[in-house]
Length: 228
Image (cartoon, rainbow, N blue to C red; front, side, top):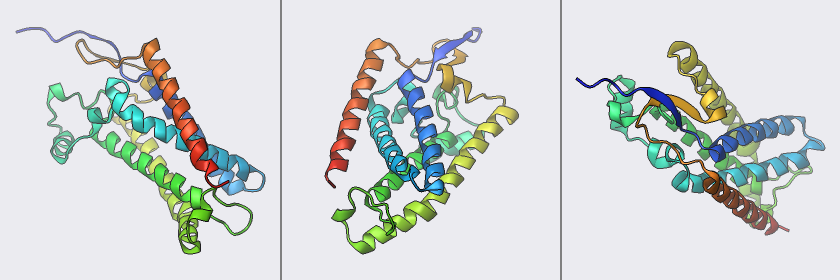
């Protein structure tokens, strides 16, 4: 009987993915706080929204061309895989706990989808006081009112709930299962069996990511300028 492969540090999260994660977390936190404070911070709330828009566009593309474990294909699991994971019957070759596990993947997709909806509604919202999204003129008053209501009320609290659930899951995995999900998102590596696929994270990959961010930022700038 062959001995199991020795564990070693494997690059799971490439630098662009890690920077995306922490920048998005900071931007979302600031957007929520600035919305509640209001006043002069609303100008920065809009700028923060444009940053989140840029990050989401980048992540959409990076989900197809990024490092191995950052690609959607590595964590977009079907119902059967999710059921096996919940029952503790996952196959060793599936590597479901290397990147985003099936439950974490659902959380990621939910957060990304909700943030995209928050950005979209923010672009056309109008609080009928002093703040108006740059694309408001392209929608009817009724649509703007519905978008504003969702963005400032229901959508915001659903987002807060998803963030709380996400943080609670991270704490549960740390204290109940001994899986630290935070440190790998800081330095990129996990201690895993030899032969586990590693994410490419060299200079060329990082430069490519920087180009994608620049293109995403330019795209967001162009979209926002349409309302000028």
